[in-house]
Amino acid sequence: MRNALIVCGALAREVLTLRDRNGWAVAVLGVPALLHNTPGRIPEAVRRRIQEARITYERVIVVYGDCGTGGHLDRALAAEGVERVSGPHCYEMYAGAEGFASLMAEQLGTFFLTDYLVRSFDHLVIEGLGLDRFPELRADYFGSYTRCVYLAQTEDAALWERAAWCAAQIGLPLEIRPTGYGALEQRLAELLLEQ
Image (cartoon, rainbow, N blue to C red; front, side):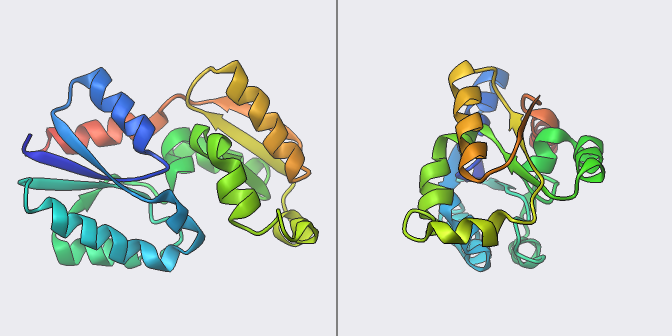
């Protein structure tokens, strides 16, 4: 393999599925998804992973949104001469640019879930935000949200049921929108076809 994908841990399972389904000959190297709780650390973690990958691979592509770095990730990638899949975050990648804009126009106060976030909700949200120790913070974190939208990559009844549990934990009504891999697959395929 000549190419490597540096992938946000929140997208790793989906990227591996897309790689296998499309027969892409690429290595998939992860960066911990927990960095989303401290987005200022994302650019340096991705930069380190790029430098490690360059030892073995000729071309490196980053599969990550800006994810709250305020443009610092893109500046780090420009300094490294590395491309990333387009999009501000995975929600927009899954819903597509128009779909995401429409969801936000419907209700600005939308909290999003993905398959990954549904699976990891306890660790990333409940424990990661300290709600297991300080449940009174729930209103501070989620009081401005009006709904929870689950952008479902798979049609898995167990995940859909768990998504309802996640929404209940933060006191929001749930809407399920099956998106599959949305624009992520197309954007990634386009980057991989560029040589």
